[in-house]
Length: 313
Image 1 (cartoon, rainbow, N blue to C red):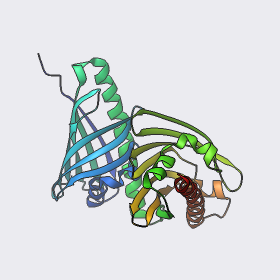
Image 2 (cartoon, helix red, strand yellow):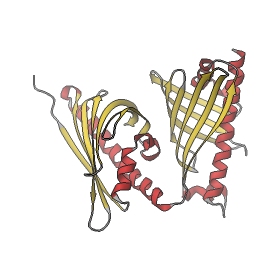
Image 3 (spheres, rainbow, N blue to C red):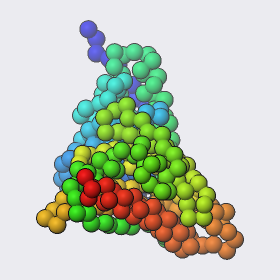
Image 4 (cartoon, rainbow, N blue to C red):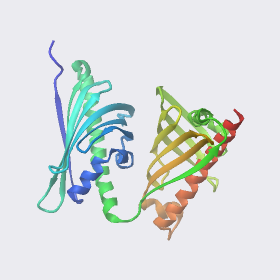
């Protein structure tokens, strides 16, 4: 029986950022959820100077897929090769490379190449994969340009912060409270509505209406990857207007004093929305304060209710 055919694609963009800055953005995969719209979460499984194994969770044609890849990083030649170890249907195999080319104009050309085989060599599977690659590659290259511009602009649009609550109770009870987000409308005062689906174990799609301090309600849609019983990571696919990116993580760590719960947020501010949302004269610094207060308040409220739940368990 003949092996499935190998299909190839190539996408490119020319950026104003210097080649090494582009390479750095591509090399650090844990930052990808804040850079690339399709990437939900990324972990290192093994990491060396030139070779590594990573696990990724990402959206593809509005589905959440996960896979493990090996990468070879060549900083001198400005190339990063990747090959999936374990692919997820309808992909039978996939690999490719990032190629970064300095241009005489001082700009940087970035090529993203893929090669893939489809399960059963089915034309419908080939079309699905090609569509996913085309959509994701366009999104990734466009967002790579935006991330490079943010790095160079110095406008302080990216912010990360955390809040913590100590719990005199078991970590599993805290995790259970955070995992069962479909119960939050009855348990949390700032959550008005939740729609939660989990077609793949421990991967949730969460749509939520949240009340703010001024009485308004905003709707978010997130993918959550759950790691029993110590962490839940998430990325908002639909964010409030003031943020172009919002990723987060709940950490639940049990020690001799009980359980420490940490809420972490990373946000990219949408500068064009600052005055529209906060009023004329508002600045990025105002947006940073507003976001820090709003997200911190809701996260701390959630952790305190998780504390009450765990301490009564």
